[in-house]
Length: 230
Image 1 (cartoon, helix red, strand yellow):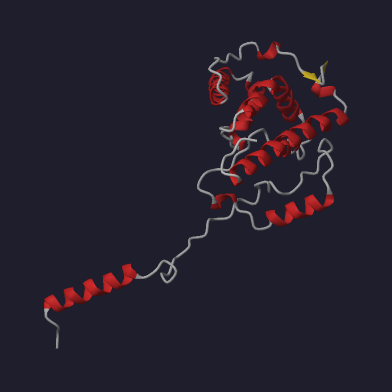
Image 2 (image 1 turned 120 degrees about the vertical axis):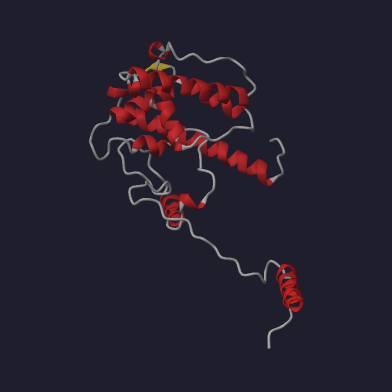
């Protein structure tokens, strides 16, 4: 025998109330796993084997690799970024092809923009940049031979740098027209990156690692203590 219509509606209403009144712990949640990254994606927790990479402490290397075993960048809503360029992103350039012009260009631009990019770390409101944006910044010299793309990339880098300075409390405009003539120096001395000894390049990446680690540690400390200034 079929129930009257109003009985069926009342039953549905009570069923809905029962479901919505259940505690979140009792509700069955369907978790959708993020797809794994492509096999060609570099694992950021695994050390790059390159001759310009500073030597890593063995315990730190092992711990980092264990973290990277289950790390999936696709599981995060927003792309993970870096406060400064990832040194491993630089060191990995040219390992397969043997053409190291890219890491030469990246290190050259890093040294030219060193003061500007480090200046931004004076504030706690630094916005990290994703790997693709850092490649845009450091790779601006690589695009010099492509006029249309170079102009577009130059404007994009200028916008990124102005945003960086603005976040650091400086509203100065940025013009990269004279970037080619800017001096490339390391420890106060001129440096030709393409012919620099491996030991010098290791020093540069070591400093980049150190600056990044110190700032990330400071940010974690500030976050842990509720935003208190050091």
